[in-house]
Image (tube, rainbow, N blue to C red; front, side, top):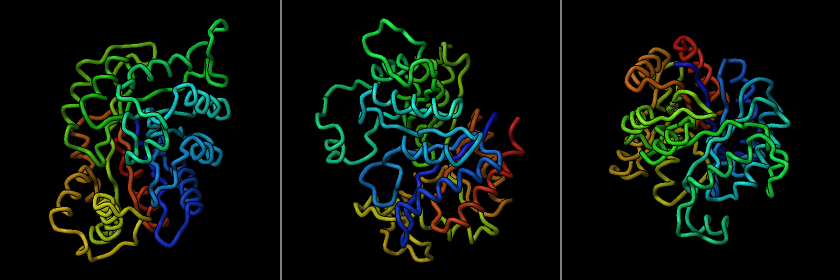
Length: 329
């Protein structure tokens, strides 16, 4: 494993505000930089009462301004919601302001419900233009071409690293074909993790952007002094995910020892999809992370965890960093 990194959804805590969430994200990033995390990514979600990173490029700028060295990026930008030129200009501007520190992960899903997707896009296309849009976007970051009719300024010549994100074989195949790094969303969709990783590695074609495959897997993390405390803290994420699945999204709930509001079958499904995780005391988390790393052989692990109390979230990621730093080769 080469690096360990952190994905933050900028959760809006129950009893708090979006301003609290964005301030917490910036504070977490500053701590993560000191703990040795390589990247700090934020994700695009819309119409979500519990997530404050909808304007993802703006949130990235806010975090990058509060840090000095850590790479900051999108995990990811949902490209069908945007014109590639606009994305190139936004991230080209970020790369100009924070040289050598900006990443751009691209997803194919809308990151929201279809009504909100229509509000974002105005005109919904039946065809899937994701591969063409990725190639167009890559071109905008390439060396300046003064004769080109359309140029990204800022953007051209910045060479912003582009990642393909996914939770199925589609993203793995596209990343391999284009020769781009690939990040798998195993923290909430682990079903095709092994097959996607193998497909990406076996079919990867070297490119001007990357000589050898770079595979990153996402892992849920909730670490605390004891197993019982970690399970209690994690109940916030379990409950939030269940409410989302039940059509009742909201702010990140306070932790609870009573999940009886969630039907048994739904709770079992939530635990399954959130199963690629390390939850417990430092010793327990270390064993679980070792097992995941040994099984999937990622080049990079990106941890993420929705914890209501900011101090507890900081401590969880501090423990995770201490464990993962010892596994970087």
